[in-house]
Length: 346
Ligand SMILES: Cc1cc2nc3c(=O)[nH]c(=O)nc-3n(C[C@H](O)[C@H](O)[C@H](O)COP(=O)(O)OP(=O)(O)OC[C@H]3O[C@@H](n4cnc5c(N)ncnc54)[C@H](O)[C@@H]3O)c2cc1C
Image 1 (cartoon, helix red, strand yellow):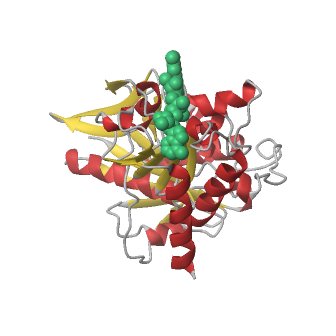
Image 2 (cartoon, rainbow, N blue to C red):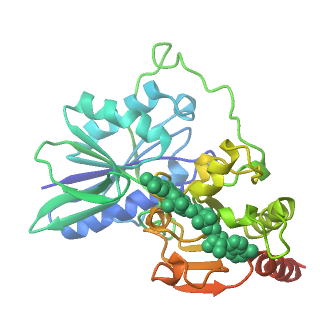
């Protein structure tokens, strides 16, 4: 019998965030597949009652909390101690948590302390003939492995964005406090603040509904024999500002900068999508001025609805890579789109 524990942090406002609720959905699907299993929810944060109440009707039979000012901030020592204490109190055989930077930092250490094993970057969980398995991708998302383990406890970090976030009506939850001794040894590290790029420089938005991809065509000579890079920059920034889409790029476009050519200044290799770039998971994608070659489109594997704008009717997108290809000038299409978005807002 599996005793499933979901570990989650309470957000700064005390609520249970999206990534934690996604891990809860993953755990509930396992619980359904393993009829003898039980589910507990473990919460860590300055105050965890609001988060417990939020999930009161999720089907968990125990709500365990480690609360206090020392547990508000992301810190290996306190997070690991809290997770270890909750896992022991729940006698968990299976510990699920969202693969956030905060949990990924401490979960491998927690698994070691519990004498268990850990798997990270898990994208799916399944039960076949009563046997539990986790799914994860290797080799730049080209090979999917299905793993089973006999060792318990098994700690599993689920990648955010792979499950729907659980939602339910809040109700008073019976919270059991798990006492964890804090003190200088655990609190040597202090978070003094957070540095974030300016809003306009923050172009990678994993939670956006749309991925907007810019290809090298934006910097190429256009019908008038001239390049129009400043205009391209403005069109793309306007669109990102209005749509709040996440910005992806082709390799060719980000490589141009290294070759001293005119490029879009807000792009870096972090924006690159594809075989040697990232594999984002937005529900929709729009590629512009991009040829849709295989090494690029392989990064679109998890994009559900794909559209592209290219001048070339024989580009890769036309060969089964996109649901819809607009054979059109992206400068004109994006200018019109921005106009419509602005009109819609006003
Ligand atoms: C080992 C290896 C790994 C690679 N990894 C990656 C990777 O991770 N990611 C990646 O992206 N690539 C990768 N590549 C490169 C990939 O093969 C392509 O070279 C690259 O994706 C092409 O980029 P592009 O489509 O932006 O540019 P181009 O091939 O130059 O295409 C530009 C397109 O823009 C169109 N265009 C021009 N002007 C307009 C306009 N006004 N309106 C509409 N369309 C217009 C053109 O018709 C053309 O189709 C890799 C290659 C190799 C060999």
